[in-house]
Image (cartoon, rainbow, N blue to C red):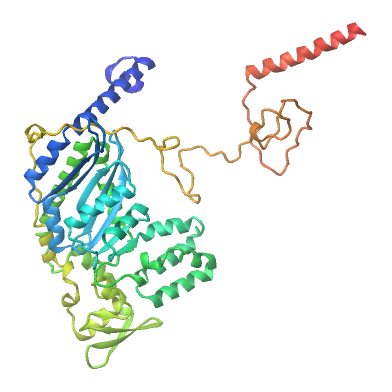
Length: 518
């Protein structure tokens, strides 16, 4: 701040004046935050007025007077209609922290469009990501999307207990997948050899139990304990081999939610209404951009899906199919054999049934019969479906001064929730991760005890002194000539010098008194 003021205002401000200026800025920021909380009821009415069919739920803390904000849920009508118009019944759930003056966390629900891109459905501001808040969020979301008992639905999340309990309560028949990237991050803490990484992901992406067992056996050859540890979380939650068919989604991770959190990173610095409005406007612009992009496509299948399909077409060159004279085929792929039924759109590797896209084995059989793949791809990946999803656009809002007035007592800002321990400014690094590059390394430095002057420990772990503070003379430790020691050139402080002089003077005085007595 001092340098900025000097460069921009040509003034040499004192440190005390800069601190007072900073306090004024922080106070103005917090006051603006409190002012936006008082406009939340009007913001709720404006959303419901401008976007019919939307769901906006705003709760206050029970039993507090004056009323205090607790949480808000937003699911705009156009997003609800667009999801039900063409998106698969696959929802990703995740949460993220705010970066600025707003207290709490943002939790969201995301779908997948026909091009396998994120489609925001609903988001909510809560005070903390716990069982109560996820239970409340899933209750409203399941009603908005007509989830029912969850039959045929897929939910993807990390291993957050609040999400697990909420999905089990409100969609008990749904398939709940855990992000394999989080599973791998926990597993990697104990098995961090780079050689293990690809073998783990072969287990996660194996589409059938035969390929899963084979991949796990290959992992056991290099780490038997690691092959046993991956079964601590049942593979039905993170491996394709146990996923249910019919969802047309083979994803084993929750990367779309991570992408959404990064996409709204700038909005997470703002005040609560500014943040919610920034997210809404970004979604509105995104829908417009997707409509523009789709009008330029001249294919039947979305380009992102075609790019993925081209990889399978190249791999089908290594598949050799023979026909039984009907719609059944036997395919040899390297050292494995699979069977495919074109009329049923099934392959014994299960990937076709999982994703809705022909696997390399099925493509080899299709090319044996015809050169057209379009009829064997699920309709959820078509450009027509993509346009149906984005045919529903968000409606613009008026300015804050034009919002309808609400008769309810305005809400106040919630209090700051202090987490235990000192506030963290950086993310926690894993044990195997290297240290931050900008931090000086302590490797090679010598720790010297301030009590006994020995090296290798400090005064808190020194065992050469008793509890009363008396010392015993210790021989000076001779350093090992084979050990590389970095000696410090720092001169002794003046305080230490004065202490040594005082001790020497006391010794001389005692010796003089002894001579006089004798």
